[in-house]
Length: 299
Image (cartoon, rainbow, N blue to C red):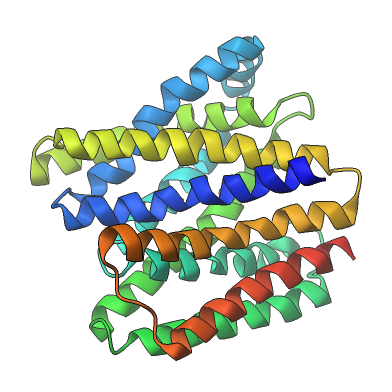
């Protein structure tokens, strides 16, 4: 359990790099759309190496050939309509603001449950209300620190991302055979989202020209730390505890560390403003709701 817990906490630390580096690239003048595209351009060869090492390439390509429309559609939703608006949201607020508001994806995942033939669990819905209350407080407290229009735009963008991520990923999980590993599925989705990202790159190039070397380096770090290392750490932690529901709940609750690590990283390295007292209380509610939601799932 100690090993799994360490993996979960380390995973949340590496996930936090997404929010901190996206904000950093915006502050240094990097075009947000390039930040989104480059992450997946760099993730693709990294995931290809992992799948090649597992000798799972033939199965992935075979599955894609059987139903290419399904793969392209839900990969575009799960990755494209998730990461593009989430990256754009980083233009409008501090990294911790985006990271904390992003946790609405937990609520979105629960609300999408009926689409997959299951009932919405009552306990999870209650804890989701706690998360929503924290997000509301965070938004209200943040009104003084940013323009109302910018805050609303950021919230709507994160809302789109929050529903797209679980929808696309769950659709693909239900479509993929049990024999396909997580690494294979993530590689396949990354590959099938490439038409979307290539189109976005053409738009980014037309609007802002080529990305700078600094932006490319930071995007590579995001791809490596968040797209590969954090994902593998978290899935290994869940794999170690998958036979014990309560231990698994503890591991899932470590995701709340993203908010804390992003808050610290943004303040220490980017000069982000501290949340107000109400904002801090909102963040505490979000973290409490995430922990409670995980234990309710185990319950």
